[in-house]
Picture 1 (cartoon, helix red, strand yellow):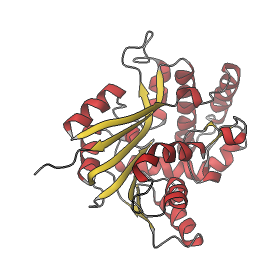
Picture 2 (tube, one colour; picture 1 turned 90 degrees about the vertical axis):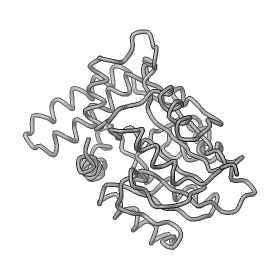
Picture 3 (cartoon, helix red, strand yellow; picture 1 turned 180 degrees about the vertical axis):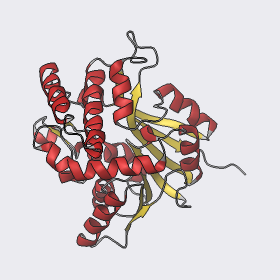
Picture 4 (cartoon, one colour; picture 1 turned 90 degrees about the horizontal axis):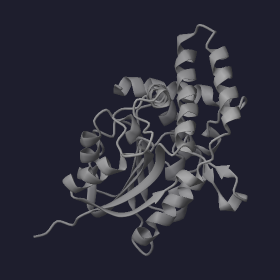
Amino acid sequence: MSSSGVAAYYDRLTRWNGLARLVGYGGGSDALTVHRALADPRADGRPTRSRLHDVVSEMLAETLDGAAPPVVLDAGCGLGGTMLALSRRWGGRYVGVTLSPRQAAIARDVMAREGLSASIDVRLKSYDDPPAGPFDVVLAIESLVHSVAPETSLGALARVLADGGTLVIVDDMPEADAEGSAEGSADLAAFKRGWQCGALWTREAYLAAFRRHGLRLVAERDLTAECRPRSRSRIAWLMGLNRLVRLWPRQRLQLVMDSHHGGLALERLLGRRLIRYRLLMARKERATI
């Protein structure tokens, strides 16, 4: 998918998600994030979109506790919710990049209202051409799924990561050898088409690329069990509603409905464990003299 296509995709989703939540599709812009909702022990197990921020903070604790306030790149920052959450916990300076003008405008407005414009900078830019850094932490949360060339994207992010710095990737990763693999299924095709997916790497592909770019896996967490896919009957009902809405012949609406249809297909894939939602944390090896 081209950069302009991904930008248009997120612009449309940001505009339509408020309406979509009214009929049960979800959205998350109320929490300044479109990340996956996870079961949250602070909410009695109810899924929240802020839970992932707690998980990322917990995973980064060993790296950041006692260290100087970090310099962080959020590669695919969306509405800025992750930067805001981590800034409140760790302080530091943040640069977020997004291809969506609408998302960037919302994020900048939020940071201005919070008095954080000096420490959180939101830029309209591709993560394949990131700011120079160096960054102590680079985040790529549900963003590399859109890369048509993950090797290029990962290499660009690794280059701006400081020696000893930490890369955190959270994304949907097909199972490499799952019985009844997602490969070739109608649900996988709907997910990739609707979410403007690129190469959609497996965990094994990421680990091999880490080695090529001087990164070492230091921690990981399979978050699939913490996702809460809807019941089969609820998914079927929402898919029927999706088909009904498509009868309105508006191209922009059709593209939004493709996205929501892809999300429902993803829920089925997650429920069958053919795709897993994983967090991978890698450290950049320090240069030797």
